[in-house]
Image 1 (cartoon, one colour):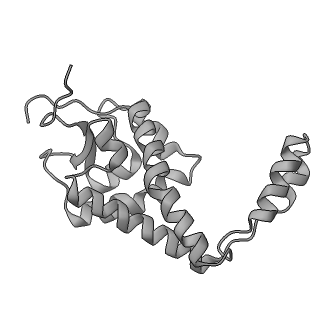
Image 2 (spheres, rainbow, N blue to C red; image 1 turned 90 degrees about the vertical axis):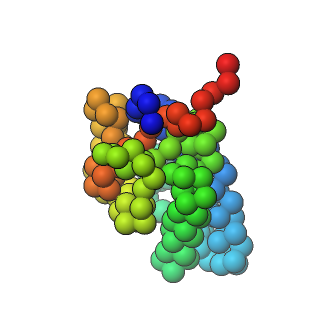
Length: 167
């Protein structure tokens, strides 16, 4: 690897957005239909949206949609497995990362991540999310653009120099 270019906050954000559209959303649809609607109460969600649109935020927040822990766990594990499969297949990239030509690598060697790092990084998303998304936001302020889950897993997100953008 010649020059290491760390992927910053916005390119990582956009890659995650694409992954939500192309990985998590389809998995979510499958889980919702497998659960026969028991996973998530869309009627309550729609009612809350209507309250919010009519400027009645307190009523919208008063009752949250019910979810099934069993189906939620199946969804989370399914997304983890699908994501890990892409990391293995595409050497540290998901469809969103592949589109933006970035990938996850070991922070020291800049080689492919191992299974331990993949699992640690995936579980680290929870830690990055909990304190007001600070674990993600720190990417914007660190020179090496590493998030909290990158730090926990000893990974980094870099531009893929093996497949340069054609200009």
